[in-house]
Length: 280
Ligand code: ADP
Image 1 (cartoon, protein in one colour):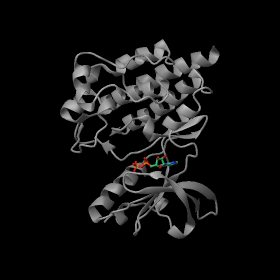
Image 2 (spheres, helix red, strand yellow):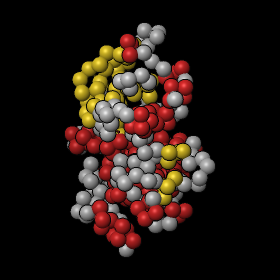
Image 3 (cartoon, protein in one colour):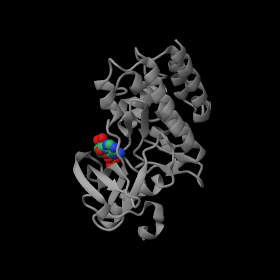
Image 4 (cartoon, protein in one colour):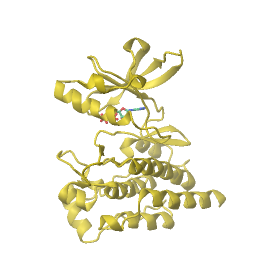
């Protein structure tokens, strides 16, 4: 059934892929690195997602991420190269050699300038403004889902929880595997996810970036978070975070979703702040 949904652009052959070492463990199975040779003979380094216990139902869920990514084309979103639909099913993506942003921030903390950290925030913000225009909610914005392509470029990935919200005005989640400490109050309380709840999560993600990969609310249990948020408690300003940016974060964390800025507005604000930092 899934086969018919894939366009030719993303149909690739297993014969054109050489599988390398294990990069990490994904939700569905191991992720390997490898090399893909395109029909024109060009070689690209790739990440290959595999699906371990791939029953028909699991396969549908595994491939739904690729199905969404297939429609996305943005310089700061992980690029899907193709899907192999016959067993063993593979999702093949462009490889980003520097790996997860969280590890990168810890390793490079003495080298990364404030302007560079702001640039990463701006790039993710642009990716999210693009999704906002497509009426797509990501629902899992966190540094664990950002990959580093180069010192100059980060990419938002992991569309495993993403949904289009075309018809309904919001997506009501049914899963329980939710990242509570990143979530907006209405997402915790009513499992309500919109671009405005993505804005809240983006704020938490910016906090992670400037606190160099600390876990938000690490001092709380998941079950305590909503009470804290409802009594007005918010994440403090990380030492490395400019006050101008922290001002934006407090607006992303407005209790009422409609009081938060849009990603479109945030792109303008982060661009200006980034420009000023470069001039300093
Ligand atoms: P899942 O979303 O299914 O849980 P992940 O996307 O977290 O899987 O991938 C598991 C691991 O593989 C991560 O630790 C990540 O570092 C690595 N990885 C995944 N995709 C890429 C990629 N495109 N480039 C480099 N590393 C990747």
